[in-house]
Structure formats: C-alpha cells, structure tokens
Image 1: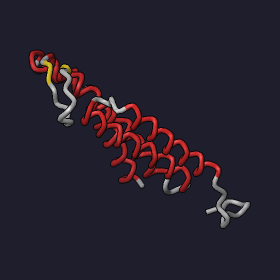
Image 2 (image 1 turned 60 degrees about the horizontal axis):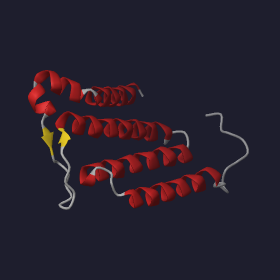
Image 3 (image 1 turned 120 degrees about the vertical axis):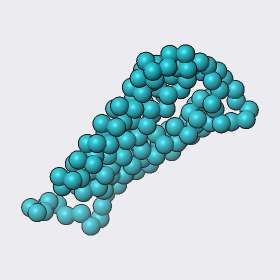
Image 4 (image 1 turned 90 degrees about the horizontal axis):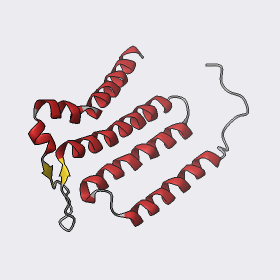
Length: 140
C-alpha cells in the first residue's frame, strides 16, 4: 500500500509541475514562449496561439486526467460505481485533450454529444441497483 501511495503521489506531483511548465518555459526562453505557433493537427483548422498557452492548456487538461485516473485507481478497491465515475471523467478529459490538439475544441456539436453521452452514462451508473448487493457491508 505504501508503494501504491508513493506512485500516485509522484504522479500527482508530476501533474502539478506540468501545470507550471509554461511559466518555467517562459523563464528559460521568453522569445520562444511568446512565439505564436499553429500546432493543431486538423488540416482544415488554423490558428496562431502563443506556445506558452498551448503548453498551459495541454498540461492543465493532462492534470485533470491524472487526478481522474488516480481517483479511479484508488476507488476500484472500494466501489465499482466510483471507479466507473472517475473512469468516465478520465475518458472525457482524454477525448477533450485530443479535441484540443485537433482543432482547439471548436467542434461544439461533438462536445454536446460527448457531454450528453457521458452524463447519461453517469446517471445510469448512479441509479443502477446491483441485484447481488447485500443490505450489509462486510466487516473486512
């Protein structure tokens, strides 16, 4: 359990450090940090964005995904419902990151559909009654 806690703790710390990578990059190379780049993968989408903000948005999304992943890993030991909820948050953020890299999250209809599907899935998970569940919790 101690090793598990250390691994999760290190993962969260790495995520926190990444959220400040843009400011460290600015200290190291202000000219490059301020340089506007078009790093989006969609061939039909073009937008200039300062490199430091591209890093900031990428790593902020990554941090939320790391937290959701860590919460899912911890909760799988206690509750499949909680694991499923955090797993869905992780999946949402992974798709969100891909959409950022693809076209700066400008596919609004995709987000409406994604939120509706994930929201419905979460509602199903929350209200699903496990038929094999007892009325009493185990003392173990």
